[in-house]
Image 1 (cartoon, one colour):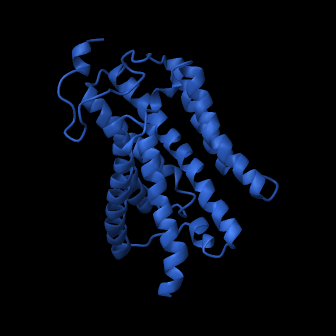
Image 2 (spheres, rainbow, N blue to C red):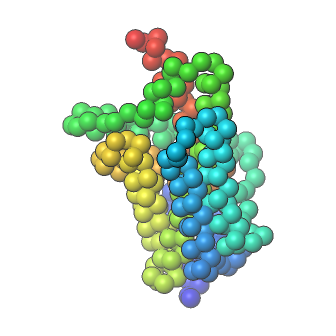
Length: 255
């Protein structure tokens, strides 16, 4: 593997600093078999979250699903990179918090613009869980908001682990340069993320690929920019809490 393919000028929207983990030996290179374990963990976590069961979900099972959604992808990564799975995460200071809010606001603006455009020329489906949150009592609503945070950490894991796997595959077997591999991983992981939302949004392909996929590109940019999963997770949480808050508290007042 020619090291020159991984050095040189980075993408314009990516500052100099630490590089992505697991594809050039920093802190370790994950083998193809290791990536299969990591991807299997993300698939198992997603299945645990969405698979219908023969019983009605309650508070306990809802939190258990979210816990599995987070822990199974982490387990897959731990098996793939023992002692180095924490390379996804970096310290969080004031700069990182500012970036969380910045990317969240940017994401909301872009999503609103694209969503409005799509709605003008077609139809969009609503997220029933968000819509139903407006009818929850105070205790259930607090629990709903609280559960959003770990669930969005799970969403970041099932997006960024495949992102890093595609990056490793593209720079390895496919022979891409680093920047081309980053772009390929960025786009493909956003496409996968959008498609995972198809059942939630009534199989509206345009909405999931264009609107949700675009939102995912912004959130992934937060990770590309910082190499810190806490930043993309924080931006995702701020984004969704603001949308939830608007739906739950402001929409009834407007009505």
